[in-house]
Image 1 (cartoon, rainbow, N blue to C red):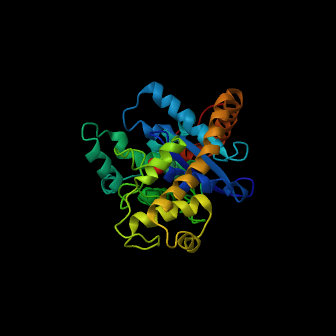
Image 2 (image 1 turned 90 degrees about the horizontal axis):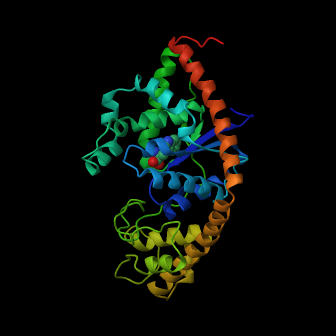
Image 3 (image 1 turned 180 degrees about the vertical axis):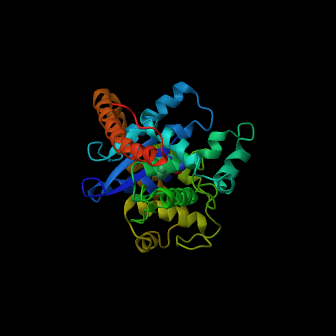
Amino acid sequence: MINGKKVLYSGMQATGNLTLGNYLGALKNWVTLNEEYECFYGVMDLHSLTVRQNPTEFRQRARALYILYVAAGLDPEKNCIYYQSHVSGHAELAWLLNCFTYMGELNRMTQFKDKSSKHADNINAGLYTYPVLMAADILLYQADVVPIGADQKQHLEITRDIAERFNSVYGDVFTVPEPFIGKKGARVMSLQDPAKKMSKSDENLNASIYLTDDRDTVIRKFKRAVTDSDSVVRYSEDKPGISNLMEIYSAASGKSYDEIEKEFDGKGYGDFKLAVGESVADILQPLQARVAELAKDKAYIDSMIKANDEKAQYFSTKTLRKVQKKLGLTERIR
Ligand code: TRP
């Protein structure tokens, strides 16, 4: 608990171009959570180093992600938005937790298996212990809840296992986090293969809408989205392409599936796809304008980074010192 509120922790990696899936599925839904929770959102730049980064681009991307959080509506005076790499406790606690994590557990992580098959030339130890760093992120702030997508569920489970294992030896040191069950964000699938999640690393550029795409690009990509051979706009398991577009349209416009089905009753897929494209372009345009405006205000962004780095440092150090003491590491002499 901080200021009488439960703690919520989440973050995104500063790699790749964020997509509409990241926005509708996560970011957009985080905006009001600070009313109920004390919220921490990290720019997860240490995690990004598990794959090689170009230093100049990487620094720009991390800054762009910070700005995007703010542009999306997360008020940096009410949410602690900070850089993971600026708070030394993340790497320190990750080391300590490495000593409480079994190789057998890490061997079972499906994301490690996926990523190591994709980056066969660079299967580094960071990729392997990635979930332990993530556990450190969450446990450092004594988070009660963590909003995550389905692909991160296994990582939250291992976080809980590590926390429980530690607590069973040393007493109640860590809060054991729960997955955040709130208003469900949209689950946005690839526009080219609706069986796959929309991904920032998809090789087919038509598969994903990037948050930086301009109006024409957005509309063109939706025009090319795969559908099916029928021509009825209806939400159904056997119509994954149309259902995905309906989910996106519903999240972007606020309309229900019933309303959407009525709106396009008797009309073809062409009209429907255009409407989806326009509704998405309508939400991306103001977001992009806000990003551009904030990017110019260097002093404001820098001052928020500084204040929030300090706040994160303060709360994380409290936990880290407690852990070090429990483990029997020698206390600092003051
Ligand atoms: N691994 C997460 C992802 O790629 C990002 C992340 C790192 C994270 N640490 C976290 C998410 C802690 C939630 C909590 O999506």
